[in-house]
Length: 296
Image (cartoon, rainbow, N blue to C red; front, side, top):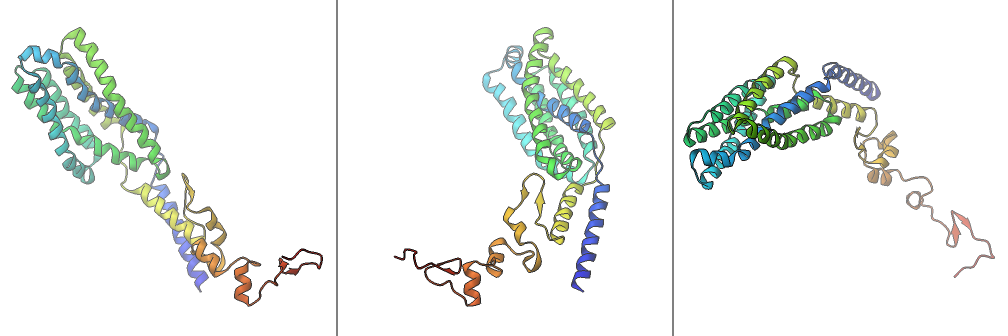
């Protein structure tokens, strides 16, 4: 009876795993490429302002303290916007959130380039910070639902690398554009790139079903336990290689240490003690020593 119930449970788990695998299509790496480029553009704007600091200081006649307030105000508002944008990413379509977030982002970049006073530039910078976090939480959630559990860390590492590279690329590109066309030009160029990014995101990316890779991983772990094998990970292998020895018969599901006490290997001192037998003194492997052996 127990075997029939166990077989039915195993069959149900196999069906569940097959169903979840069918619901997780093989999303192309093109999606990751788009997310990386979008993240690089999003991070590039953070270095544009630092490149043109001296030009802004000369244009508006402000102090270094005022320039520092531009960075501080942007950072504080951007930090406060992370949690609300993360809540939106949990409740709304993430592809749309990224694309629509680039529209006010581009407007803020145009606003900074067209600023006629330091106060106008300061307000534009605060507005940019308020919508800066629309990309980060949504992109992170999309990557987690696009690719299988065992590839997630590697994929997110690549994605994170391009975000950091965006800061360096943005600084270099902004310096070249500002030298050739003036300090306002980089803001207009990156604003146009933001509008292009919104169009590409809507055109290329697909909204995945939430939580399928995690549900598939959990189902595969339960199926492995139902089949009498230790839960494994394709990245790390078995949780304890020694547990393979103790996942059959009456020791199934018992830790290796507990199993060794419950059913010690035949011939061990623990099994002889439990059976009431003892090894004769001066013997080896249960056989008496010869009379010629040295006995201390």
